[in-house]
Image 1 (cartoon, one colour):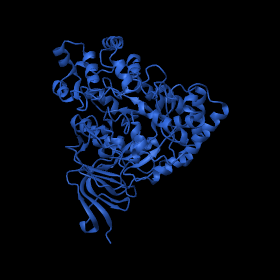
Image 2 (spheres, helix red, strand yellow; image 1 turned 135 degrees about the vertical axis):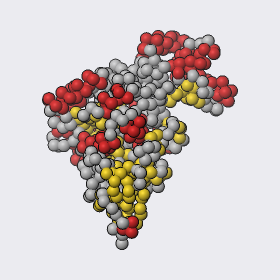
Image 3 (cartoon, helix red, strand yellow; image 1 turned 120 degrees about the horizontal axis):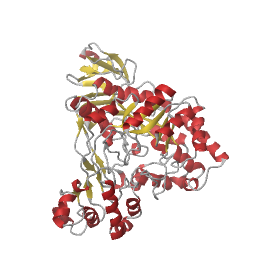
Image 4 (cartoon, one colour; image 1 turned 30 degrees about the horizontal axis):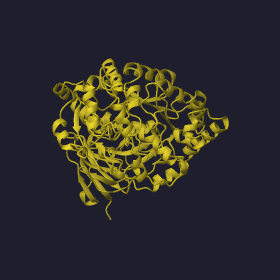
Length: 575
């Protein structure tokens, strides 16, 4: 019998805990690393991987995802699984599907259709819904074949839905008895394996993370009484971490009240574009406040950082990331037929033109309307082929000049001609390296934000590990590979309470990536029709990854999936 199942030979080992790189071999037996460094005889291995000229590093820990539904039809949680991620954390922003009564399942899915832009038909076709309680949901995740490891927050929105009812809870405060029951469910969820609580608190004004009906999500207007009660309930367990999408002040409040660390979304570079709209504070203000909280007050708050440049593609059939602007939000609510009527209305267009001129960019987000390109026009509309020849590949500015029309009119007319299925592509918003350096090197910064499983028709931020290793480390030298891998793996594992993962050492689980540092990156954006119910998504595949291993099994070779599903549910963040 061989001493090793797999030996990775001759690679440059970067262990994820900032040990200086060194060349050596790595031996795997079962799901564990049993030898790290030195030389291993080929004859001692069942399989030998030649890693000469390659980096051998720990798999990435993706802290901010919404794969709560996708993991049931996509075991590798792609895009994350393509880009070196071996562990994903679900249940972010307070969103999820458990606990949930059978009669409330459609309402729970509807909440995610606009907020995180997950297609309803896909969720209906792809989710087993063989649970009611959070315990049963974790059991369903555990028995589902997985190509990555999965850890989960206990999201608070489903708890409101289960006890009070989502819509009822928006109309009145929870009673004392209801609040006590909800806190008990939070504690129960943590006892069953949740790593902590998650919540979104974005208020009512400027909120682009709305419910399907355009109202704030159930926790967006949470009372201080409820919030403190949940924090103290989590704190009573003596462990856990909270994740907040909202203000840094609220993240600090949660950390103080719970006595446990908090992860705050989001820290963004000056000049960066948030897929959800603009930042609420400058990066310098945020970094200064984070430093004071952590170093002076002793309140542990990490910052989930946005570290990708990206261009968006969108159609008006489903676009929801303009919800912070009332005239756009109102026009983009309702059925396709209702939206077509509203988008053709001259009075509504007048308001859109006024806000466009005032904010200096489409949706006020920095996208230059003139440079937005018509990416595609569907063929299954009247004169589809002729419309393609006339418009596809041209920018809105070019068409407006050619036709003598206002750019907003051009955009909306083409959308209507395509029955709202016409696709548009924004210019790539590029963050200057000197601005990104400040974000990446902030002591409490955790790179991301993946948002994997959400907004899949609009953005491709799940490629963030490849950007950090390729664009920011190799191309711009903002961070060494030693620090990059620490921030991608060991540091987020520590921050989230993920025990025994995130770095390479003898006895550790064999979550490993082998890649070419000269070519690691992402391919161009493309659409894939691979979602249940025939839905499509926008993706960027990975390049430069020679092998990805999860718990000692190879899941990808040169970008091709092996169909292995060695992933585990990590209850309480345990290995």
